[in-house]
Length: 505
Image (cartoon, rainbow, N blue to C red; front, side):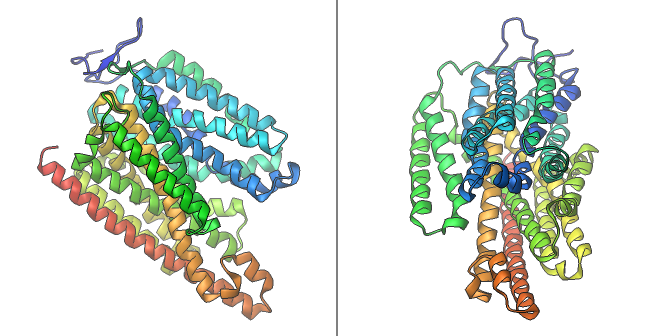
């Protein structure tokens, strides 16, 4: 294997294979990518697979509504709160070590969740899975940056990104299939064979690398970032349910802002910061950050709203609704796994690719908002447009973020990428959901924001039709708001990326 000069800030573990960037990349890089993608797939699946098991959990564990919320949120809160810390730890102590630890923790958490016999045990197990998930999501992307040559990064990141889309779409489908044939715990135990295979493959195939300047851990920075991000995500998640002006949401948001401000101050003073704030002075980095947040904002919010439309308005069951939205993920997978999206990215350049992706996503949201009355073909058109936009934009933004950060900080870069994706997705669901609820409540005041309650109290078919029409109007308004936000964000991101290119950044 032909090697180039050693990467600055990198060192190898004693007896480990050399892992500096190479002209050809690691000889087994595609096999390694397949293994870590499979591990990543299980993490992404668990973001959505639990949703279809809610009725079973309610019956068999006697779970209350608050219990169900914590079963779902414990995983995402812990995972999003730890992403930056996990990425920094991978850089400092070894990406292979953290990948192995992440797989082990995720496997143990899955085992505990599958065997849980109370809501408290399941919530604790889901939190443990979130710790493992944070380690996996950050180290998989960091390893990709280490084992592939720079000219292959776009294609490799595209495949890595497509796995996330695949997991997001397949979660409800796999969950529905498992629940049709097994008890609810099987949706977690199915992770164990994948984890076992992943551990063997990681130990055997993945080379070790870490940042030489990682001797002194930034413990206070890790604590502050974890608390701040978890509080911020919790405020976003709980806003639609408790009200954006409620004491709980405002207090949590205030804690998040205060702690994150203290984190930024601390990081600007510590000799070896977990997050180098100078990254944000790089227009390429800030442009990619803006684009990534908006693309996840649009995709997450659109799927959240569309799923409600399919189930509440058209009467689809969860499995059929999952199948109906599958073309979006299928488009992303096909374009990224085939390498077509990577070729477009190279040909168009990052600024144009980002702008085009946002235009396509915005057009898809408009199509879903205005053509749902024509039946599924209008929805399908919107899904395909959003899928093409995501296939082109997600890897472009991830590549821009990772390439604007020193290779020795690949784990932190992956943590930033994951944190922004979680934040954008949560923000999309919260903001577009709030637009939907406010529009619906204005048209059907007696129903507040509950469609089922409004339908239950409707007097006659004409009243039910009016309620459904009001809900559809709210969906249309929220999708159009999302379309405008995505298009504006695309323009800002493309402008910043173009300026960075002209400045030679």
